[in-house]
Structures are given as structure tokens and as C-alpha cells.
Amino acid sequence: MNNVIITLRTNEEIKKELDMIALEENRSLNNLIVTILMRYLENRKKEND
Image (cartoon, rainbow, N blue to C red):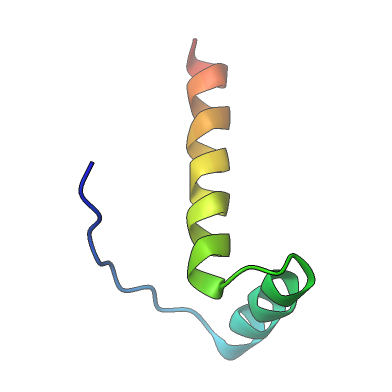
């Protein structure tokens, strides 16, 4: 699967919260966001099945 670049616009408060979580989990912000999206999609798939 090829990686693609997307742009995410959010407010500063949300970014700060995500930065703190990424730091706590020893992840990059990008990796954290990808992980959150993957979990969301998995949960949605389970709900639809």
C-alpha cells in the first residue's frame, strides 16, 4: 500500500493535547494520528459487521 500525504487543520488546543499524548506514548504526532485513524476505522468496521 502506498502512503499519501494529507493535510489536517485543527485548532491549537487540540494539537497541544495530541502532542502531549504522542510524547507520553513515545510516538511522533503523525504516527499517533495514523494510529487513532486506524483504530477508528477498525471499530467502525466491527460495528458494521
